[in-house]
Image (cartoon, rainbow, N blue to C red):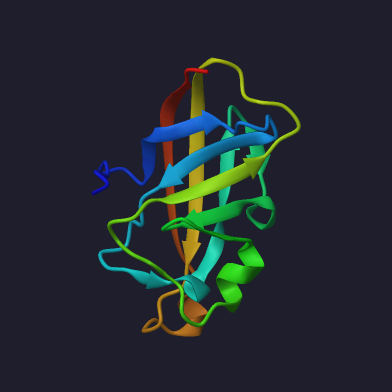
Length: 132
């Protein structure tokens, strides 16, 4: 069982990728129930002022990896409310050891909200640490 923190940006799982090609950050779904992945428009991540575009970020939900296009194309995949999404953010070099200011802007569409009022945007900023 995964224990999730209340904030959308999770402190657990913020780390450099083993291959040295970027870093990972975990997000909790801020919506009160699960969501079909084709309703996820994407997430923009900013670390210490360096912005990473939603279309460049890979997703992993429940151990299954998705590109942003695969998330939007899926007709069966879901993001359960109790499962964190692991976002793989590409970067030519790892983040430095120490504290970083991490911001996330998550854009979701809700099936019951009129199209002209979409997407719903959740934004959050936290101070996280890279330990290795």
